[in-house]
Length: 389
Image (cartoon, rainbow, N blue to C red; front, side):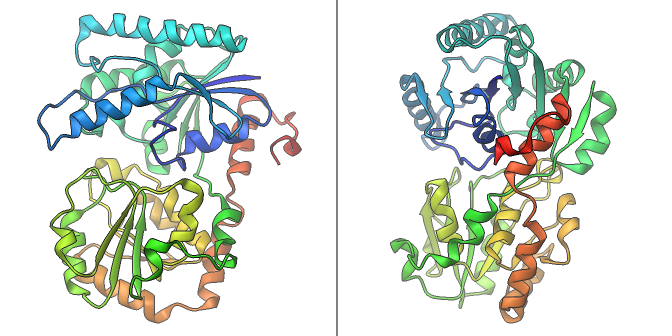
C-alpha cells in the first residue's frame, strides 16, 4: 500500500501528536508513506509583531529540507506553494505548482495509485486530481474558523472533499452528527493516545532541568499556546487568584505572553520534542485546559485530554462537547473563580486511586487501535491486526 498524507501541520516544527501524524506512524509499518507538510492557507499579514517574517523564515527553512525521512518510518516533504487561496484567478496556478511537485515525488518513490489522506483543506484540488485508490478527508477541525483564512474558500474545499471522499473522518461527535449527511461516507474516530509512553513516564526518575526547581504545586499546560484556542483573560485571572501555585506552560506560543511573565508564579518553557512531553507532564500536580468558548473549540477533541489522563493527572477544563464523556474524571468550570476553585479541589482530592481511575479510562484508546479501525473501515476486516502491533 502507498499513502500520501497532506498534513495539517509541519512535521519539522509543529506538535507531532496530531492525529494525521500519529496515524501515518502506524501506516508506515505496512506501507510506503509520504507526509506532505501543511499547505499554506492563511492570508499573509505584514507588520504583526514580526510574525509574518518569522513564519516565512520557518516555512522557507522547511521547504529547503526537500524530501527527507522522518525518523518514524515515513517520508516528509515540504512543498512550495503561495498563500493565494483567497484569490480566485491564482488558485489554479497554485494547485498546478503543488500537484507537479507531488507527482515528481511519487515517481521518485515509485508510488502508484496511493491512498490519499487530506488533513489540510488547501490540498483539496490537488487531492482530487491525483490518481488514487482511496480519498480520505480528515474533518477534525472547523478550518473555516481558523485565523486569517478566506472562510468562503475553505468552506467550498470542505464541501468538495465531503462529496468526493471515500471516507470523511470526524473526531468530534457533535460535528459528526451535524455534518455526516453532507458526506459520501462519514466515520467517527475518537482520538487516541500514546498510552504506554505517557503512563510509564512516572517510572523514569529523570526530570527535565528547566522544570525541576519550579516550586510545587504546579498547574501545567502542554501544547500550542494560541489566541484562537487559549482563553488568555481567564488564565490571567486564575493565576492572580492562585498566587501560591506555579503555572507552567510547555509549548510554542503564537501570542504575546509578556504581561503574564511579569507574574512571579508563571513559567513559559517553550516547545519541546514530542517524546519529552510526558516527562514535563509528570511534573504537573494538576493539568489545565482553559479553552475559549468559540466554534473552533466547540468542534474540538483535544488529544492532550487523553494524554493528561494517561499520566494520571487531575484535569481542570472549561466546557466543550467531547469533555462530557469524561466528566467522571475531569473537573469542569466556566468562570475564573470556578476554575480556580476546581484547581484547589483537584489538588486536595488527588490520590493514587484517582490516578489509576484516570489511566484506566484511556487505557484501550491507543493509536494502534485507532489506525486499525480506519483500515478496517477502508478495506474490511481482512487486515491483520498484528500488522500494526
